[in-house]
Image 1 (cartoon, rainbow, N blue to C red):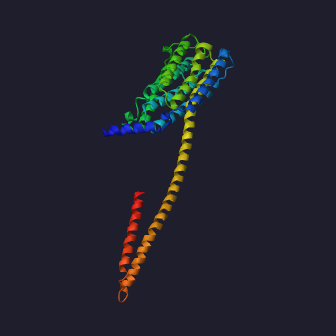
Image 2 (image 1 turned 120 degrees about the vertical axis):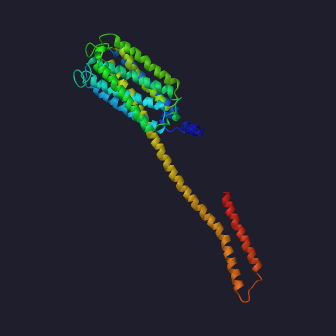
Image 3 (image 1 turned 135 degrees about the vertical axis):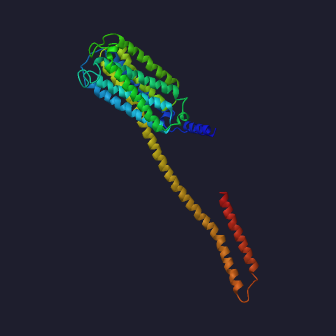
Length: 376
């Protein structure tokens, strides 16, 4: 029972006083910025949509550059989420960080497999089809991780993970995720003869299967978005929804506007993916900067408060010393007078009664001062 009470106290404290961005409630300002971002993305998608099918020049360096940035952004996001987990352990944060490892890793692996990125046929896989299948894995695993996060963030908290250190949990999670990524990549890179063919060349689809895959990926991402929308509370939830919304045009372009690589829609869709990848890492870095600023201000105020407290204590001590000095001085003077009269020859005892009465009164006065100080 004491352990359960302690765990409940930890969870309650984390709710009352948010320790990380993942538990910080979204404010009206955050919601306004997020809505503005979504509106801008919607306008951009609407402007590009009529020109999505237009074929433009092939830029082989586009995919390596863009998806390397996506990979770096996603892996940095994963590191920041693991840091959040180390402060406030929650299974939901582990799931979300794992999703960003999936996203960043598959983005880089698709670059290695993409025809023309580093070599005419790609560094891994069979050329056109491996890259397409890695793309499908990329956009299937990330919404799955978001869905796990959305469904578990309110039910599984700190108490469920206290049995193992956060460092060991993070290491085990990363190893398992990387192992799964390696297995999936090995399948789509070396066993393509057992998989449906998506491309006849490195540009055009062979069948309608890629469109059908995108038709499945869009509602899959929408499912994660709806689950997050229904359970949203924090800043992390809000900007994770923006990140998911930013990737939606990627599938719509492939389904409706263009099923061909190196078109305006194809380039724009990848740019939307980049925006989605950079959204959460930008939010985390900005919020951490604000948190650092507030912490620095709090430390400055604490130091000022300490200085003021020391000055106050010094003033109070001086006042106490002044108040006690008066009765103690009177006691010392009366005691000295009494000793002088007792030592005279013959002893002078006429005023001894008044002197001792004064000493008694001043001692009571000093005691009263000390009692008043104790009361304060």
